[in-house]
Length: 220
Image 1: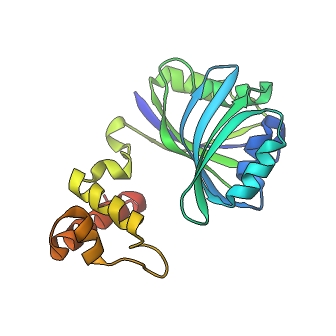
Image 2: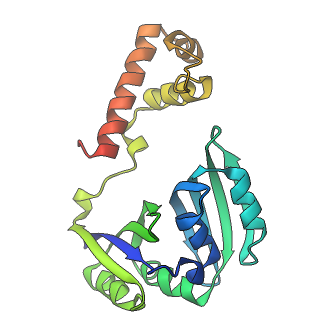
């Protein structure tokens, strides 16, 4: 069993693979996009994305794409949003996503879209199935293996490192505006929401922030 971190590049053919793929990698109103979960059935692809960008512009564009069966947007502040998109499958999309969605392979989120048309993802599974998947990707699409490892070297989702109380503190801080710029809440407001002392709320937040930053930046 192995873990592969791979980058897949479509040589400027993102729109040919699927119009929505082109939007997520090249649209001027999308600064960064990641796929958090997906379900590929062969004739349809449902993906939950987190997007940093303009939600209104994204919606207007999605409305004009015939291959988009439906979508649902949930804003996260002024410049980011979650969006679930259900796409009709094109032959090129199936050729790209099919090989890593079959058999015993598991795609470990997030899947990151790059502005150069590159999609970076981690795939885990039996050695022979991984090799077969890489071999099955069309020649017109470049596949670069960036890292090879075992399950033990895979990173868990950063939020999985938090205790229930640390997660509760972080969620309360976000909801109250503690991380807004300018900040609209302080430790006391978070403490009131948690029903604890301000010093305790501050400690929960410091520990949550430390774990999340170390997980994201590779410190542990």
